[in-house]
Amino acid sequence: QKEVEQNSGPLSVPEGAIASLNCTYSDRVSQSFFWYRQYSGKSPELIMSIYSNGDKEDGRFTAQLNKASQYVSLLIRDSQPSDSATYLCAVTESGYSTLTFGKGTMLLVSP
Amino acid sequence: EAGVTQFPSHSVIEKGQTVTLRCDPISGHDNLYWYRRVMGKEIKFLLHFVKESKQDESGMPNNRFLAERTGGTYSTLKVQPAELEDSGVYFCASSQDLSSPLHFGNGTRLTVT
Image 1 (cartoon, each protein chain N blue to C red):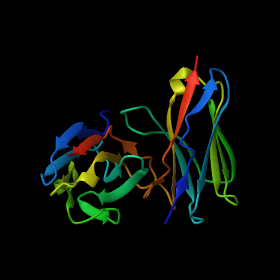
Image 2 (cartoon, rainbow over the protein chains, first blue to last red):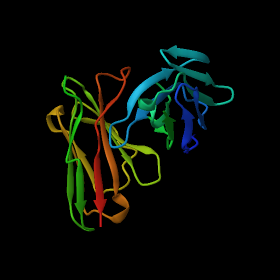
Image 3 (cartoon, rainbow over the protein chains, first blue to last red):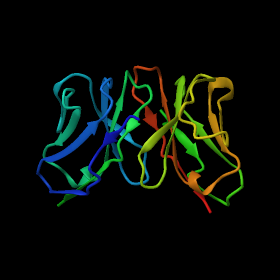
């Protein structure tokens, strides 16, 4: 049974702070890792993908992957109230084939 | 470009009734996926179409669920007869090919009473 674990939160951070979201996965053959953002009642939206160990930066977002520890994280710098949402970690064996999701972490950024 | 659209946005039915959910993928997207999130659980894969063919239906919970994609355009997911445990949010997603990101719809919230 493939599992993706996330702390459900809520994770509360003040505006301007760094938000750190974490995810662990059980299937060692996982090769592709994704972070989705979901606002309440809306569709999950892909914000980051990462495939190799290390860091990947895109604007205020940094994804970090450690395959040996089966751990992937998302850092959000200079957090804004508009970043308040549920962040979903998803993994797959290859490409964008069948995604295995975690339950998501709710992030609350206070002004 | 229109996104993935799902209809209805909400559906409330009684146990034993039939419900049909519809998904219109982004035009030109051959890959269409159905996912489901039940209360308190993670989003789980149901099945994957490539054009009109079922590529992977390993996530379909049982034979009360029937998905179709006639003509390779829109897809329907029928639940017959619905049970209480079928309540949840059903998401549809589409992609141009297997190396492209999935675009999700806003989901259909199904409540079975």
